[in-house]
Image 1 (tube, rainbow, N blue to C red):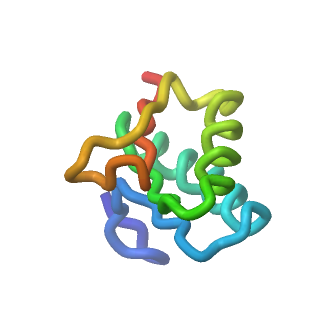
Image 2: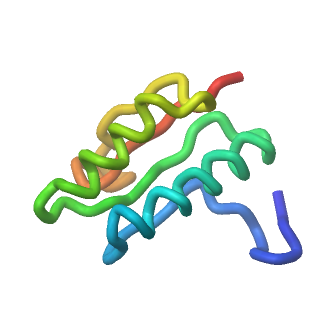
Length: 89
């Protein structure tokens, strides 16, 4: 799916180098756009680092109404440096 403003929608959001305060609004917008575009599986790349961004992303996902489930991504999608998200139908 395309959006004239941003081009083709990518099923992956890269949050590297962002603070939690910067990352969460982008994550929320990304989840809504993915859902509205008809995607049911997306990946959030947060990196490994200290783990704080991963922890806060997963905390946010746990309470987000569009998220059915989430878990660490498989190796081709970033392994422990990313989270795979299953969106509601």
